[in-house]
Image (tube, rainbow, N blue to C red; front, side, top):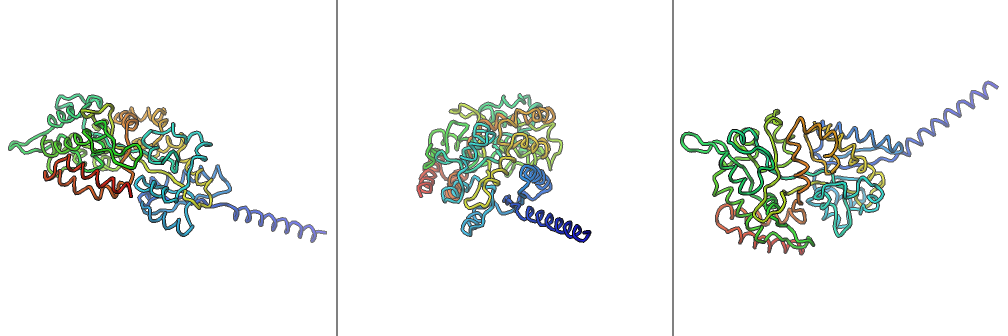
Length: 424
């Protein structure tokens, strides 16, 4: 009898072990593609949190991150081979092209049953990159916006109003820039009043702040060759050549190095561009939206934010979307803000900026108070076929900067080239 009982117990143990193995074998592995730039300690510890929350919600699944170059090539190759991730980051520079090529799923049905991921919860500019013809193929991951970063102490010592709202117009920007300059005894410029950049992306910022648009509503033609656009490019030229507000060759690092008082930069520059040079930046750094041009009606600046997508053919699209839903949940976005030091304010969600956590952070880092306004009024980075447009029109902007082509002529030729690209 004892032998029978022992045999019975042994069979039970074997059966239980087999059941556990079957459950383990049945777990689905959800693969998420991130970029190689995201292999850092802070990103790694954040992904550990995401994995924990995901696997608690989905005990029948495991989460695995893989790292690829920020390029469409990997997704195109994966789609051709039929082995794709369950969700992936995609850049605004190529996500729309992948969708048009049939590589990405439409996500409208998922979003419709996930209230916290509906469009009204996000900053307006962030959603534009994720849609075409009313269909949604991505979920916004973040939002960063071009703006004016400045040293409030330099403004105070120059007798200028240091509040962000005081920098209202292009005329104010020039007046401030000229007042903020410093010269040595021989008349050489030793501190730039304002450092800008001269390219197609910064052109979009000045264009938007002057009431213009980069594309027409269809996205099939450009709309920058207008009076607003010509004024914007002329103003950029004057900042470089006429107003004498910049030390030759000065870049954005001049701001934390205290050899510039104002720079054209971006809302996320504190983390990677300023803090490594001056950890005490919160004491003196402030930011303002791009000032109004002569025809502008609201402050504005070019904004960009990448997205999560699900490739067609994903083995676990429902679970891939669940990763997005957790990552972009309101409480998780607030936790992300804290995780990255309560300074990296790049969430695309509106409610992140009305949270008590963000309000407390503003008391410690006053420049954060300007970010909700800057993000709200942002307009989209030129994302439709822009890498090719940028490559082919860059020489024209160089000619303008070298004074060998008039801004109006450069924009007319840029329009011709861009419209050929968009029509292809």
